[in-house]
Length: 278
Image (cartoon, rainbow, N blue to C red; front, side):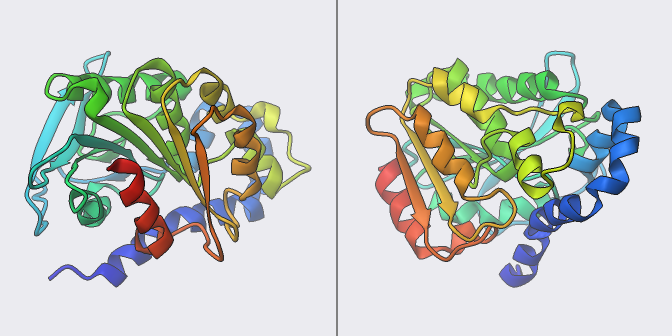
């Protein structure tokens, strides 16, 4: 039987990873500057591989999907199927764990009568390869978006990113025409997030940029941001700064007293999400 408490303890590992960043970044600084393409990749994207013959086990109705990235790397995803579907939500998850864990939150979204497409990044789950840089990850999420367009009209696709996934999600919204963009606990940019955790660190040497603010400047579809005002990882001020790039109708929903994890269990989030996607 699925144990929601144990699963969510697994999902809290993203905040733990970012907290580790704030404590160990001085130790890593020399290594990062010496070899940013390797050591930082493992630091920000540690991966969570599953064997190729792994059998997913969820009570919900789902299909396992495999498709190729631009360079022919095989990427893995799950499509959770809702009753009387209105469209699909493309969900880009955090930097720890794979779909065997993330899939446990699917009911939150399928209950709203949307299919849920969850992608495992390179080095996660059954996806091949490893993440190397921003542009490669952007290309991969675009391949996922293009795959969905084979089945769904673009105005039926909602792009949703959580935590580290918010930058790539914003990239998709800026370069396509989905129904809307939802960001959960985003960062202004990854450099800004690191600087907030460790102001003395030279962020010019980090391997990933994920400039969410630049993508919001180009985004023409509706944008909805959810952020806990007690988030200690990607600080709440990140979303306040992103408001500078809002259009008419865009919205920041502040989750009072909430931290970084457990958003899918927050009543205010669930109520607002229902309003937004209907």
